[in-house]
Image (cartoon, rainbow, N blue to C red; front, top):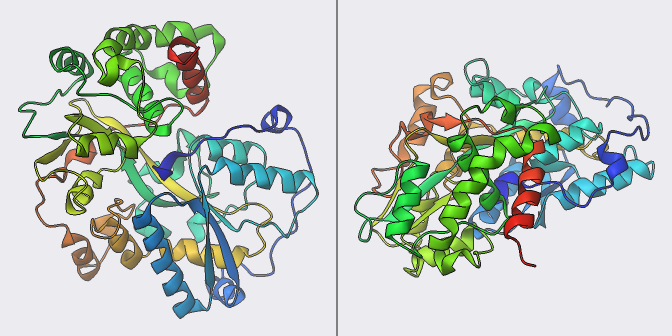
Length: 408
């Protein structure tokens, strides 16, 4: 799943915030004059680095490119990447080499650790996001997640694009009453050995399961929203390791191996090897039923006390060559038309970041196209959302998991 890439393999010196080279001068256009931004953008090419591992998402980005070309004469080049951290590394290298104005990347699909690292190292252009004409449609005062990325303040350095929330799904032909809490999941796995698993760490969905379990099992979640420290890591995570020690013997293949990714886990569901799985795409199960990847008896739900959710964003590097076109593209991604198409399960099925109260009646109607679908979540399910822990916890959790359960 592309929503939650993480930073890997970067220089320790760079990640500690070492000063590199001063930022480039301001652009000729004025952000407060949107017309000047649009005029500057006309005829530019946007190199948009985004995950390229899903045909539906790629087709949606192709449609966005067609609209940008038709409306603004802007060419959108989808630079398909497996891990957005590769793109972050390139921006770091360009800054170190003194490339301040002619970067090879104009827009990034990003959130979490990657955003935190880029912000810390002054690798982002901005602030600009809250000056987009369509940004008010997110109603940020009522939806603070539009201004926070894994507990890190966005401060206008990236623009929201879509939502994600950990969603469980099961085959109702095999499971009459799915587990609604982490303790119930353990009891269910013991009663149904081999019918559940999670992706291999450090896959983002596997790491999300670790965070979900930790939040559900800890008595005090406050430390998880602060930078991780060696002093409290062992104490805070002890319940997680006790839980996993008890769970693993009852997983698929007895917990001795794990699927490599969310799509691999979904394939196991489609093949009937699993009866229960999860995704970070709330409308994904309904879309996969429509695509015949999952049986029509598939149903979705969230845990009783809520599940992890976050927003994914787009951001422009500090040295983007075509900033104006990147901003015009980001604004279009926030338009009701683009957001409604993205949410359509026949197109992608990625939930909108727009607030329905901020839209006109006609605009709201475009989001009503999702008919009653038994595989989809009920409308109020996403209200039970748990905030993502501070991004510094992810690497520590992954390292500890690999040391404890990884291959010798």
